[in-house]
Length: 144
Image (cartoon, rainbow, N blue to C red; front, side, top):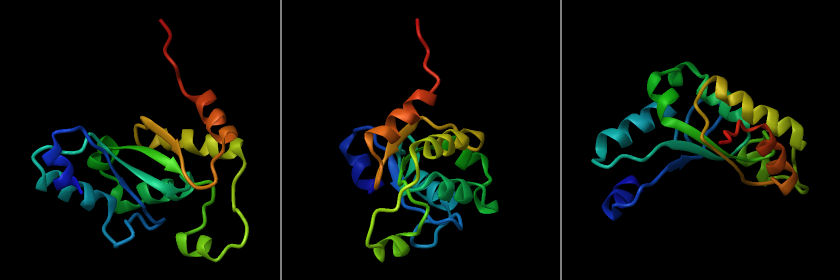
């Protein structure tokens, strides 16, 4: 995907689906995925992020020893959060929506700033306007 986006000349971001063990779905660590994509492209992604995972899953992934690197801290910058900490396989078997409350989700999103510089806050499966408003209320805005 990075190679295709590189050819467009447009700025782009790569977003991963990750697991608690610090790896992408294919087993590659976040650190190694970033390192390889950055090495193999002339026009690198603006940054990297995760999608469709709960902030607690991302926290476990980025604090895994394999991802405790300057590369991950500086190149990983966002999350489109799922409201459930269950794995994709667990969610596939659910008959009802699994979701965390908006306050907890927002607090857990803000907690990620201890480990990476969050620049992109978004929602994925299960997020509602209430979740996003709760997150937005916690963002540090600069006014002029």
